[in-house]
Amino acid sequence: MNDNETTDQGTNRALVPASGDGHDLLPASLITGVDQFENPGLPPHVHRAADDDPAAAKRAERQVATMFGLSMLGTLVFIVSYFAVPDEATFFFPGIGIAKTQNVVLGLSLGFAIFFIGIGAVHWAKTLMSDEEIVEERHEQASTAEERAKAVAVVSAGVASTQLPRRPLIKYSLGGALGLFALPLGLQVAGSLGPVNVEELKHTIWDPKDNGGKPIRLMRDPEMTPIRFDEVTNGSVFHVMPETLQKYIDEGKHVLEAKAKAAVILIRLDPDLIKVQKAKDWGIDGVVAYSKICTHVGCAVGLYEQQTHHLLCPCHQSTFDLTEDCAVIFGPAKRPLPQLKITVDDAGYLVAPQGFAEPVGPSFWERAR
Image (cartoon, rainbow, N blue to C red):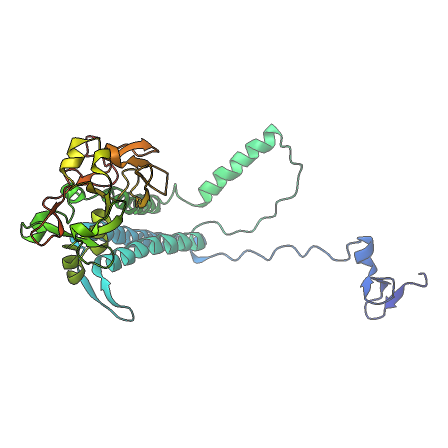
């Protein structure tokens, strides 16, 4: 032993300094790599009740199958509730307040279904699958054909250790639970593709039927004040909503949906610049109104270039020409913006005597184009 080493008197192990200052002494075995400890091995395997008692194994199998069955029940409740519970139904949920019944039932039933799949799988692994610990020795990365065959055998043995071939009740109940659990996911996709009644997509609150058959006044957005014809000067732009929107606000029903489809932009330009006769006829002395919802993906077309008379969608740069009845001259949009026919009532206010002649916004599959 040299001058830099000392001895741990309690264990009679050689110690060397961990650093040059002589402090923090470490065992020499850690420096030299000499293994001073015997391999403790693994504790003896403790058998479970299901390992030795066929009755206990059968009982565990029934318990696992029961949990998978409860999962199937939760999935079925989800599917039935999706159709049976009215969308507008609500109830008082303690700690939360008024909640939509359908949301709560769907959430709880789906959570119930996945919860019992999970605890069923855990109970299966804890009571029936093999739980013996094994040690795999390290080997070279490149495997021979024999070693690959052994790997396949190990996988096959692992499948056998799950006891699925011997426990058909678990196999079929697990398959049923997982198979049924996939249905709610597909059901939400299929059920959310769109309303069954296509007329809901075509209808806007500019329809005079929503106003007792009377023409609907054009209102400034968001002030909701009526617009007089003589207030619309050449080059001016107004963002417009229908007077009937107030009824939806008062009732608190589908306000955002109604507002999204009803947005209109009102602009005045020289009537001699308008090249399409229908656009002139549906306006008044150069005052024209068009849907503000882009026919590409529904963004708000709110940018007006006064010199070129172009309306620009800021999302994907679709450009519409006001002088050509808002025809698309650039960008991904495929259809012109729908025009809203307007007139002037006896008090001098701008009104819409009819709704849009075609659906507003992006195309949908029931449209011809």
